[in-house]
Image (tube, rainbow, N blue to C red; front, side, top):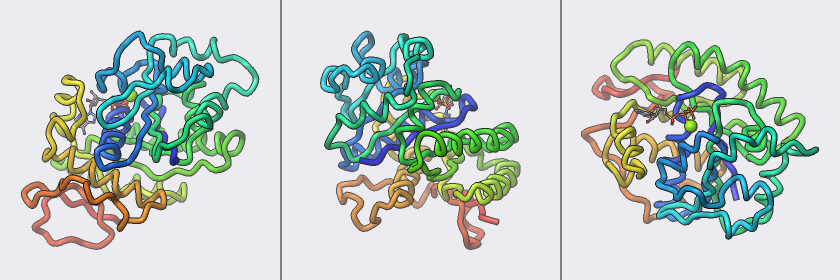
Length: 288
Ligand SMILES: Nc1ncnc2c1ncn2[C@@H]1O[C@H](COP(=O)(O)OP(=O)(O)OP(=O)(O)O)[C@@H](O)[C@H]1O
Ligand SMILES: [Mg+2]
């Protein structure tokens, strides 16, 4: 069971969208997935069309049997957030409170992946996510605020690793809402790559393009692959999920054969290539 947290203290950078798309793609590819909404905003739960007023993350953290808290969604199982999570700081005030999720997850068996969506804050729920996770994906928009916030965030992750979770690794930085029309995105990518090197991690070679279909799918409470399987964002999230699978030690050859075809010649996904690519590939940015 691999536990992956999508994180950044900065808001609106695509954590929830990434968590949802990754969980959905792993699920539809044949893996057994549990998604956990660790954000009191409950955006993941809402976008999944989860039932309200049912037991969920809050109860799971309080030792309620998992089978009483988990909702079955078509592609993944879900521990949903509700408004009680906003009281987490007060409710979970006992000694060792950073380990509640880690301990609760020990009761689970049979999942290949657990995907954690976190809040835009280093609160007790995010600390629980970092304490339980094997790896974090740092979601960033290619702007200067995301870049300047990285030092602080990476410092927090290093402290979580030191004090709570020695096995924690940074799987990489995922560039989201990528704008192919501007030179700035390309220049910012080089700066993110330099930062990633400094922190001994990587920028994922897949960047997620800005795509209005994402908002549509969330309004309709479905994932991007069910909503619009050939759109840019679906292609990018499929490619990212496969890349993440390999980064976390998965064997490329063992990716389930039932995985739907996502690539189309007409709309190549964004790749941050190590080698220069032919001029004809319009949506290609290069690793410097
Ligand atoms: N690739 C994309 N293209 C277009 N819109 C996107 C894309 N990714 C995310 N969005 C939109 O950007 C907004 C923020 O995304 P999201 O909620 O995933 O970010 P977040 O980091 O989880 O935010 P928060 O910090 O508030 O939890 C949402 O309205 C979402 O629909
Ligand atoms: Mg979110």
